[in-house]
Image (cartoon, rainbow, N blue to C red):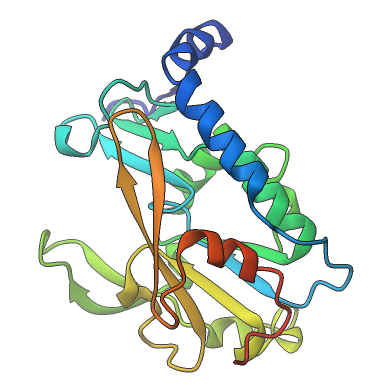
Length: 233
Protein backbone atom coordinates (compact mmCIF):
# COMPACT_ATOMS: atom_id res chain seq x y z
CA UNK A 1 0.00 0.00 0.00
CA UNK A 2 1.45 3.36 -0.96
CA UNK A 3 2.03 5.98 1.67
CA UNK A 4 -0.42 8.85 2.02
CA UNK A 5 0.82 12.24 0.95
CA UNK A 6 -0.29 15.80 1.19
CA UNK A 7 1.17 18.93 -0.33
CA UNK A 8 0.36 22.59 -0.42
CA UNK A 9 1.30 25.44 -2.70
CA UNK A 10 4.29 27.50 -1.68
CA UNK A 11 3.85 31.23 -1.11
CA UNK A 12 5.59 31.89 -4.44
CA UNK A 13 3.28 29.53 -6.30
CA UNK A 14 0.23 30.99 -4.60
CA UNK A 15 1.34 34.47 -5.62
CA UNK A 16 1.74 33.37 -9.23
CA UNK A 17 -1.62 31.62 -9.28
CA UNK A 18 -3.24 34.53 -7.51
CA UNK A 19 -2.23 36.98 -10.22
CA UNK A 20 -4.52 35.12 -12.61
CA UNK A 21 -7.46 35.64 -10.23
CA UNK A 22 -6.67 39.13 -8.95
CA UNK A 23 -9.46 40.78 -10.91
CA UNK A 24 -12.09 38.26 -9.73
CA UNK A 25 -10.90 38.44 -6.11
CA UNK A 26 -11.01 42.24 -6.13
CA UNK A 27 -14.57 42.22 -7.39
CA UNK A 28 -15.62 39.67 -4.78
CA UNK A 29 -13.89 41.66 -2.08
CA UNK A 30 -15.80 44.81 -2.96
CA UNK A 31 -19.07 42.88 -3.00
CA UNK A 32 -18.34 41.32 0.38
CA UNK A 33 -17.61 44.73 1.90
CA UNK A 34 -21.02 45.96 0.75
CA UNK A 35 -22.93 43.21 2.55
CA UNK A 36 -24.93 44.43 5.51
CA UNK A 37 -23.72 41.81 7.95
CA UNK A 38 -24.94 43.71 11.00
CA UNK A 39 -23.33 44.19 14.40
CA UNK A 40 -21.59 41.47 16.34
CA UNK A 41 -23.82 39.63 18.77
CA UNK A 42 -22.74 39.62 22.38
CA UNK A 43 -24.96 36.70 23.35
CA UNK A 44 -24.22 33.74 21.09
CA UNK A 45 -27.44 31.76 21.05
CA UNK A 46 -27.66 30.51 17.49
CA UNK A 47 -25.78 27.30 16.71
CA UNK A 48 -24.56 27.43 13.13
CA UNK A 49 -23.51 24.00 11.85
CA UNK A 50 -21.34 24.25 8.76
CA UNK A 51 -20.73 21.64 6.10
CA UNK A 52 -17.20 21.11 4.84
CA UNK A 53 -17.12 19.66 1.33
CA UNK A 54 -19.46 21.39 -1.08
CA UNK A 55 -19.72 24.51 1.04
CA UNK A 56 -16.42 25.60 2.59
CA UNK A 57 -14.19 23.65 0.23
CA UNK A 58 -14.45 21.69 -2.99
CA UNK A 59 -12.73 18.32 -3.37
CA UNK A 60 -12.02 16.57 -6.65
CA UNK A 61 -10.18 13.40 -7.60
CA UNK A 62 -7.52 14.07 -10.20
CA UNK A 63 -9.11 11.44 -12.46
CA UNK A 64 -12.47 13.25 -12.40
CA UNK A 65 -11.75 16.07 -14.82
CA UNK A 66 -15.36 17.29 -14.83
CA UNK A 67 -15.03 18.37 -11.20
CA UNK A 68 -11.64 20.07 -11.55
CA UNK A 69 -11.86 23.86 -12.07
CA UNK A 70 -10.02 25.13 -15.12
CA UNK A 71 -7.42 27.90 -14.88
CA UNK A 72 -6.97 27.41 -11.17
CA UNK A 73 -4.45 25.46 -9.16
CA UNK A 74 -5.64 23.46 -6.16
CA UNK A 75 -5.01 25.03 -2.77
CA UNK A 76 -4.01 21.64 -1.37
CA UNK A 77 -3.43 18.02 -2.38
CA UNK A 78 -3.67 14.95 -0.18
CA UNK A 79 -3.22 11.23 -0.79
CA UNK A 80 -1.52 12.33 -4.00
CA UNK A 81 -4.83 12.20 -5.88
CA UNK A 82 -7.27 14.50 -4.06
CA UNK A 83 -7.36 18.15 -5.00
CA UNK A 84 -8.78 20.66 -2.54
CA UNK A 85 -10.06 24.14 -3.48
CA UNK A 86 -11.19 26.60 -0.85
CA UNK A 87 -13.89 29.14 -1.43
CA UNK A 88 -12.91 32.78 -1.89
CA UNK A 89 -12.67 34.70 1.42
CA UNK A 90 -13.00 31.48 3.37
CA UNK A 91 -11.09 32.66 6.43
CA UNK A 92 -13.06 35.91 6.61
CA UNK A 93 -16.33 34.01 6.48
CA UNK A 94 -15.26 31.58 9.20
CA UNK A 95 -14.09 34.48 11.34
CA UNK A 96 -17.45 36.20 10.83
CA UNK A 97 -19.30 33.08 11.99
CA UNK A 98 -17.10 32.51 15.02
CA UNK A 99 -17.46 36.11 16.20
CA UNK A 100 -21.24 36.12 16.10
CA UNK A 101 -22.47 32.58 16.71
CA UNK A 102 -21.71 29.24 18.21
CA UNK A 103 -20.18 27.68 15.13
CA UNK A 104 -19.56 23.98 14.59
CA UNK A 105 -18.37 21.80 11.73
CA UNK A 106 -20.09 18.55 10.78
CA UNK A 107 -18.83 16.57 7.80
CA UNK A 108 -19.76 13.18 6.41
CA UNK A 109 -16.11 12.64 5.47
CA UNK A 110 -13.67 10.40 7.29
CA UNK A 111 -11.89 11.89 10.28
CA UNK A 112 -8.46 11.55 8.68
CA UNK A 113 -9.58 13.45 5.57
CA UNK A 114 -11.13 16.20 7.68
CA UNK A 115 -7.90 16.54 9.65
CA UNK A 116 -5.92 17.07 6.44
CA UNK A 117 -8.24 19.84 5.25
CA UNK A 118 -8.37 21.51 8.65
CA UNK A 119 -4.61 21.42 8.86
CA UNK A 120 -4.41 23.15 5.50
CA UNK A 121 -7.01 25.89 5.91
CA UNK A 122 -8.15 26.16 9.54
CA UNK A 123 -5.00 25.85 11.64
CA UNK A 124 -5.66 29.06 13.58
CA UNK A 125 -9.42 28.80 13.81
CA UNK A 126 -10.30 25.12 14.19
CA UNK A 127 -9.95 25.12 17.99
CA UNK A 128 -12.69 27.74 18.21
CA UNK A 129 -15.40 25.50 16.74
CA UNK A 130 -17.84 24.25 19.36
CA UNK A 131 -17.36 20.77 17.95
CA UNK A 132 -15.98 19.08 14.84
CA UNK A 133 -17.80 15.89 13.88
CA UNK A 134 -17.03 13.38 11.14
CA UNK A 135 -19.06 10.58 9.53
CA UNK A 136 -18.99 8.55 12.75
CA UNK A 137 -21.56 11.02 14.10
CA UNK A 138 -23.74 10.59 11.00
CA UNK A 139 -26.43 7.93 10.64
CA UNK A 140 -26.04 5.15 8.08
CA UNK A 141 -29.25 3.17 7.43
CA UNK A 142 -27.86 1.11 4.57
CA UNK A 143 -28.97 3.35 1.69
CA UNK A 144 -26.52 3.94 -1.17
CA UNK A 145 -26.11 6.73 -3.71
CA UNK A 146 -27.42 6.27 -7.23
CA UNK A 147 -24.03 7.19 -8.68
CA UNK A 148 -22.08 4.69 -6.60
CA UNK A 149 -23.78 1.60 -5.19
CA UNK A 150 -20.98 1.22 -2.65
CA UNK A 151 -21.15 4.78 -1.29
CA UNK A 152 -23.44 5.14 1.76
CA UNK A 153 -25.92 7.95 2.29
CA UNK A 154 -25.08 9.65 5.58
CA UNK A 155 -27.76 11.55 7.51
CA UNK A 156 -27.15 14.27 10.08
CA UNK A 157 -29.58 13.79 12.94
CA UNK A 158 -29.60 16.65 15.41
CA UNK A 159 -30.95 14.52 18.22
CA UNK A 160 -27.31 13.51 18.66
CA UNK A 161 -26.62 17.09 19.67
CA UNK A 162 -29.58 17.30 22.03
CA UNK A 163 -28.57 14.03 23.68
CA UNK A 164 -25.05 15.33 24.35
CA UNK A 165 -24.56 16.24 27.99
CA UNK A 166 -22.02 18.93 27.11
CA UNK A 167 -23.67 20.47 24.03
CA UNK A 168 -27.37 19.64 23.95
CA UNK A 169 -28.94 21.55 26.87
CA UNK A 170 -28.24 24.93 25.26
CA UNK A 171 -29.84 24.22 21.89
CA UNK A 172 -33.22 23.24 20.47
CA UNK A 173 -35.15 23.44 17.18
CA UNK A 174 -35.43 27.20 16.94
CA UNK A 175 -31.80 28.15 17.58
CA UNK A 176 -30.00 25.70 15.32
CA UNK A 177 -29.26 26.40 11.66
CA UNK A 178 -27.88 23.44 9.73
CA UNK A 179 -26.11 24.00 6.41
CA UNK A 180 -25.86 21.01 4.09
CA UNK A 181 -24.50 20.40 0.60
CA UNK A 182 -27.12 17.71 -0.07
CA UNK A 183 -30.76 18.10 1.12
CA UNK A 184 -31.19 14.44 2.10
CA UNK A 185 -28.60 14.85 4.89
CA UNK A 186 -31.08 16.98 6.86
CA UNK A 187 -34.16 14.94 5.92
CA UNK A 188 -34.58 13.36 9.37
CA UNK A 189 -34.83 16.75 11.13
CA UNK A 190 -38.31 17.96 10.09
CA UNK A 191 -38.55 20.67 12.74
CA UNK A 192 -35.09 22.15 12.21
CA UNK A 193 -34.22 25.08 9.98
CA UNK A 194 -31.67 24.13 7.39
CA UNK A 195 -30.20 25.52 4.21
CA UNK A 196 -29.08 23.63 1.15
CA UNK A 197 -26.26 25.43 -0.62
CA UNK A 198 -25.05 23.94 -3.86
CA UNK A 199 -21.41 24.43 -4.83
CA UNK A 200 -20.95 25.89 -8.30
CA UNK A 201 -17.60 25.63 -10.05
CA UNK A 202 -16.61 28.36 -12.49
CA UNK A 203 -13.52 28.48 -14.65
CA UNK A 204 -11.51 30.49 -12.16
CA UNK A 205 -13.17 30.34 -8.77
CA UNK A 206 -15.73 28.38 -6.83
CA UNK A 207 -18.72 30.56 -6.02
CA UNK A 208 -21.70 29.86 -3.75
CA UNK A 209 -25.18 29.67 -5.26
CA UNK A 210 -27.64 29.47 -2.41
CA UNK A 211 -31.07 27.86 -2.44
CA UNK A 212 -32.84 27.49 0.87
CA UNK A 213 -35.38 24.83 1.63
CA UNK A 214 -37.59 27.06 3.74
CA UNK A 215 -37.81 30.61 2.48
CA UNK A 216 -35.89 30.68 -0.80
CA UNK A 217 -33.42 33.30 0.48
CA UNK A 218 -30.64 34.22 -1.88
CA UNK A 219 -27.08 34.09 -0.60
CA UNK A 220 -26.95 37.74 0.44
CA UNK A 221 -30.21 37.49 2.38
CA UNK A 222 -28.89 34.36 4.06
CA UNK A 223 -25.76 36.20 5.22
CA UNK A 224 -27.88 39.01 6.65
CA UNK A 225 -30.23 36.58 8.37
CA UNK A 226 -27.34 34.97 10.22
CA UNK A 227 -27.66 37.67 12.89
CA UNK A 228 -30.85 36.07 14.20
CA UNK A 229 -30.71 34.40 17.60
CA UNK A 230 -34.08 32.67 17.28
CA UNK A 231 -35.19 31.28 13.93
CA UNK A 232 -38.90 30.99 14.64
CA UNK A 233 -40.81 32.91 11.94
